[in-house]
Length: 409
Image 1 (cartoon, rainbow, N blue to C red):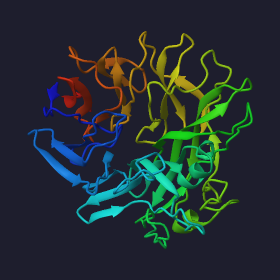
Image 2: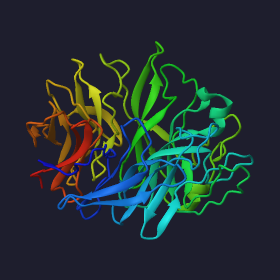
Image 3: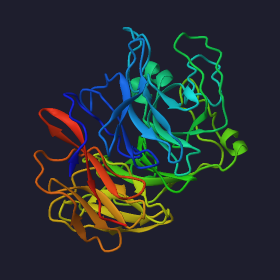
Image 4: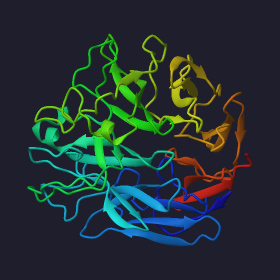
């Protein structure tokens, strides 16, 4: 078990894709806390030497954070807050964008156009937690809409979007806060302000994860017959060519004055879990986790309580069917999780230690012991070569980065 960072400041890992492809560097941001978004730099640390490098430094009072790494290239994508924030336009869910930084320079991922008529391929608000697909061609994100937020914040429901490599998207720039982007961006989830109780309709989509290169799974908040919110697992198959990404469905890709941007034609939202009648219905939002498929795209993992109310790992096929409970621990799983690149294990925090479980048997193996403080619940991430696992842990009042050998193949 090795501490990588020592500076008297917080070091924040994103929940996945934080390693460079060569498994030598970890990318992170430096916000003062997980919830306070005021960091000015995106950085990386060499896991062998401890050397720290600045990847990107924000200017004009902007803030940056939540960085992830391309699976093949030395390219980074992260949240960028507004430059020169003022009383009318500050960092918020609907006031942020994705930015790509790498050898080719720095570019906006998504365009924003908030002045009608809106531009196809541009969005109207803020994107968040950008994650490359396994082959690096697409980028997923969650989204909030400025246009509807200004109309009525209750209409601004979180959704899942994708940036496809069919840009650039150039907007007219009729508003000083608008900007162009390098990728064609659309929403792929569909939500409604008032889901019908007991139906497959959802009022929020979040915590998405790639299922291969052409599908996304995510958590969708449904309503039970009694009106209680029940988070269920959903999946969408994605277009596989440029025409598919740009072809509107039954509603405009750009949205309207009263509706959110709509998915392209052929993107159908399908529900995978049906848990309303369980003793503890629904996937859990605490600990916060992102659904994750194994590299073979044959199993999607998520967290849900067992019949005794203990948070466990569960698996389900992307085709649907009955979920399989993988872990049977007495203590609940305490963190977000990730798959080992072999697809044979999953890593997470259990009993205040870094643990992994066999993806077939559910047998638990502990990789660490004797932590000074419990590992953070935000991120437990294997390196691309599978040899190491990284996490965050507090030392001296500051969140630091740690790694240990996984011992897995």
